[in-house]
Length: 114
Ligand code: AMP
Image (cartoon, rainbow, N blue to C red):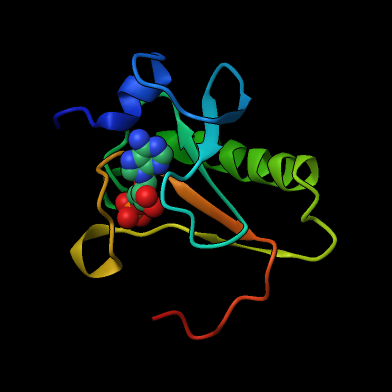
């Protein structure tokens, strides 16, 4: 599938407010934050969506969740709590075709989501 703006962020071709990076992943502030803390956690290697992931991606996706935990601690929302979201496909509200987790915190979240 064609690459997205997230691949350009991974290659540092366009700016982003990066909060965490390692060999496999990158975390950066969402441009259009929906909460006081809104960070996107992505794998550097593009997987288009959860629907495109396979068993070989399981450890990478698990790693991303541990990165989320680290970023939540780094940004000081680990005690108050946070929400982790992955949108998938049209009805899921996915707008960028490079798999990513949203980490939201800094306020109480509503349930159910809209
Ligand atoms: P989704 O709608 O789940 O695919 O989430 C995509 C997210 O990427 C949205 O929350 C956008 O605000 C965010 N986004 C799009 N472009 C950028 C960018 N250049 N830098 C940071 N966040 C972005």
